[in-house]
Length: 199
Ligand code: GTP
Ligand code: MG
Image 1 (cartoon, rainbow, N blue to C red):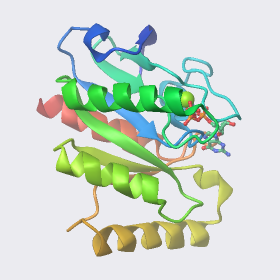
Image 2: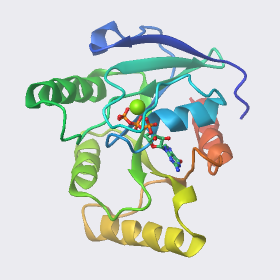
Image 3: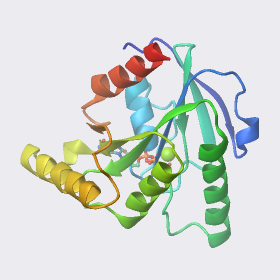
Image 4: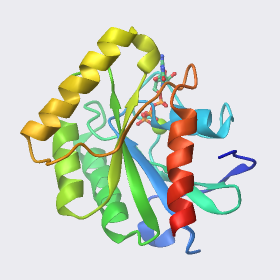
C-alpha cells in the first residue's frame, strides 16, 4: 500500500473527544522510547509528523493521524517510563486503558518491543491484558538495524518461545522493523491494507 497523504488531526487525553468519524483505526503502543512515533514517521515517509525524542516520555497524548483520507493511525504515550511522576503515570495509564476499552473504531493495536531485549514483564503483562480484554494486536519488533541478522533471528525466537510458554497458544502476527532503514515497511502497510479491504 502506498501512503499518499498523512495529516495530523488532533491530540487529546480523553477518548470521548477523539475523532468521531467511524473510520478504521490502528494504534501503536509500547514502552517509552521503543520507537512508536519514529515508526509512524517511517511508515508515512514524513520526518516529523509524530514528535520523537531520544529521551523517553515524549508523546504524552492520544494523537490521531489521518492516512490516505480513509483510516487513522494513532500514536500513544509509552508505558513503563520510571521518571515521570507517579500521579502523571497513573493519569496516563487511565486514559490509555480507557482508550483501549472504549474506542470502537480500533481495529487492531500494534505492541512495539525493542528487538534487542528479552521479553520484559511489563510488555508480557500488557499483551495478556489485551488478550483478556479481547483487543486484537500484533507485535512489532523495533530497532532491527541495531542487531546483526543472526542475533535478530535468535531474539525473535526467544520472544516467540516465551509467548508460547506463557499465556499464548500461538504467536500473534509479528513484524520486524527499523525506522532507520525502512525494514518492515511494506509488510506492515500490506497487513493494514488487507484488513482495511476486508472490513
Ligand atoms: P515515547 O513517545 O517517549 O513513548 O517514545 P516513542 O516510543 O515514541 O519513541 P521515539 O519514536 O520517540 O524514539 C525514541 C528514540 O529511539 C529516538 O532517539 C529514535 O531516534 C530512536 N529510534 C526509534 N526507532 C528506531 C530504529 O528503528 N532504529 C534506531 N537505531 N533508533 C530508533
Ligand atoms: Mg512517542
